[in-house]
Amino acid sequence: MFKTGIAFHYNVSNIERTIAFYTEKLGFCIHDYNADLRQARLYTNNKDCLIGFAEMQPVIPSSTCITFEVDDIEQAVQIFQSKGVHFNSEIVEVPNTVKLAPFSDPDGYSLMLYAQV
Image 1 (cartoon, rainbow, N blue to C red):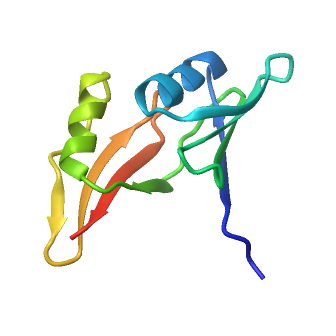
Image 2 (image 1 turned 180 degrees about the vertical axis):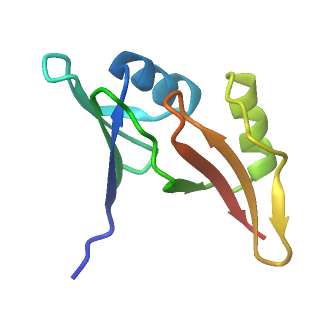
């Protein structure tokens, strides 16, 4: 029934700032961008994972957290920190399960890297 892709949509306060954060700091690619409508969709290195953004006021971040799996969490954190991404804590490990590294985007939406242990 379900296909392999997934998409999320967020309201943001500044579409250009959001696009810059996700492309320059996280390495996402622009799928489409409509400057007139103040909307964009971006994807990770996997085109089946889309995040849509629409510029709206006011923005009230939800408690939902999008997590992105990486192969080497220590390396990914180091790369993102070198690009100016601020992590909310050190890497947390759930023994024999997963490692987690939480951070936020410019509007305060919760994001997290994870790696299987």
